[in-house]
Image (cartoon, rainbow, N blue to C red; front, side):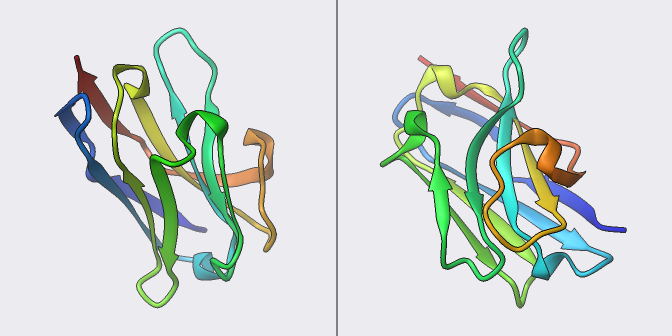
Length: 124
């Protein structure tokens, strides 16, 4: 069983930056493809960025391209999301997720393990 714990969320002004971290424990999470999702009130959970097992392949949603960067440190079993040039529309609860496969995963149902989420609020 894999446990995921996110940290790094908070309140930031538009144009600012935050770095989210997701620490994994249990199971063999360092071997899995992982991703960051977000969910704003009244909206569906959406993929923000994904990364494969090795970290050599990544995906970023169009709405964050050029602003957010996903990375991982398998030795530390930690996933990161560097968020720059934040906008008020980025306000949401951000979730870390781990799949049970090695390649990039794009859909909610492809992820087996989820963190509890961390709130990101961007003020205008």
